Image (cartoon, rainbow, N blue to C red):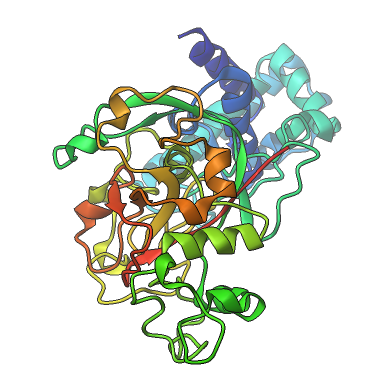
Length: 425
């Protein structure tokens, strides 16, 4: 496609100046591919991986040759060619004789020979040599990060988090989820019928909690809102119609189980989750928002950070016998933790097994009432709601990012939790 070819031209132009880029430059290039050429993160990253560019320390071609710019420029054109080719022959032969052994600078012999080829190709050509020397004299043209913003960080997997537009304040415990389309649903061999068909969905930008609400955070809510405390004799507490009788059953009075302050709160009804979100000035995510955020920009993946064959089950929360501390699963491309495999998370929508067959494309939300009505009157809701995420104790196949679950809003299972989102604008 044209955008792909145009981005490849940018990469090849850069490579003609230097085959080595920094990690910050790599991030900037991927971001440029996404923003200017409409590529996905994986497409831009694949182009870089196959381009021959090397991520590492940026050595000047003159350092490689062991000669200064001034010394080389004193030579005649014929002498420059002779000198470069002589040094190239010596270093290239030495590299071949190394037999592919690791180098002390961390490069492979193949990477080193690629650099030598670039050095020779650039410095024996007067025009390329002049352009390259110009880049060394002007750091702003040498560093791609001055042309493309690189303020974002990378995840442990090297994936990009989204740039936050100017003017949007993102709290430390939340991340920015960009507006746009994604493919919702699954055709996985183990997918349930309510996950089908895959369909295109577009949602507005929003902010989302980095992790599920923890026991410690929920306790603060209870301290400030005694009407939502666990039922206790002669104390203000949650009304029976807003839970099923097992609300916070493992808590002692208003204290969560010992050692679980940083675990996701569980045994909370949809009503309690809604009340907490309202107290924080937030809300529960729609089902579409949850899946877009969980996918993190990765198309066609089973989980929020990988496919099943890419997951080290021994380091995941799948098949655990209880919740685990937040943040143990890898963060996804948006910087979200625990999107799959720790707890089920309540969503705003009512559940409808057939919704995907007739869902609107833009900001889909299911229920007999509008999203705004639900937010203002959540205590009146009686229809089953959606949960997402896949909890502890479940086989990994059940924690896929597209997996859906229905439950009554009073239900308070030991696997039920939630996280909040916040509208922008």
